[in-house]
Image (cartoon, rainbow, N blue to C red; front, top):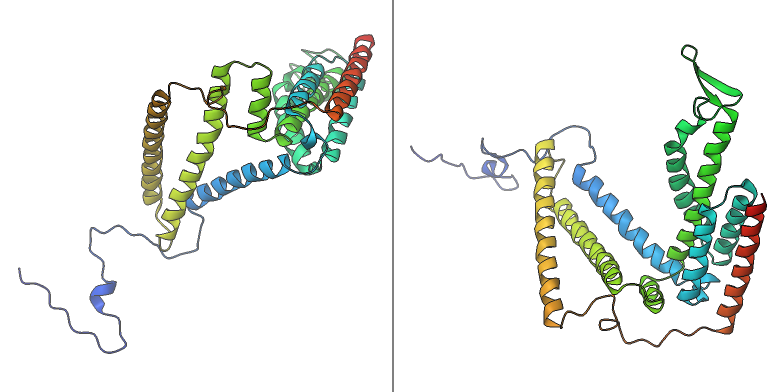
Length: 314
């Protein structure tokens, strides 16, 4: 077949062959209203995740009360408050623990929305949904508040609803102290505190490697989606979006396997030193308990004993 002749373009015009598209070429853009692509939504989620990690590190290094304390004292005291909150059976001590967590968060210069949003909305709503069947009168008998179904009778009882609210508040109190520990302690200091408290080396190894390479893979995924967005024109079709997401997941999985193999070989080459053990720990000055740490730990211990006695009598 003879080749198709291309007429020369006039000055100032775009050649016709430049705008032509072959029949087997996929459509990269479609006319119509703009919508957010799957790659763009994923990129926004990854950016929010990275921003959350950076914000957590900034909060952990802020000039607050808990940030100045030794990580070992925070681990012992705040973990004790988590256990104490989970063992409470009365509403009064739970409300006191919630007030204490809010006070420590304010003294540590933590935004109230961060502590309340992550602990109250996430954990509280989740526990409330899980324990919602306990609000039915068939599980917790009592005067009905709302009749859901007349025959057979299904109603929400007042004691059952109070029990669900108590479980949710207790979970929020326990999660608040855990968040205080995570938001006021840098990850490296947290590992040092666990190492000083004689935590298992394998456990520290898994924690350190998981955090380190999770952030690395998150950055790799964000770079991949950024490159995809910067090289695309228009709005991609859904088939191309699915094809790209599948290829990106496969590439990220392959990169994860290659990274795990490299880390394993590097660990063997260095004599099998654990990332969370003493052999792989960075050379830093040892942890020292100051007078302020001892006073704070003593005050928190006395307060925990008082709350435990209050809950036991109640």
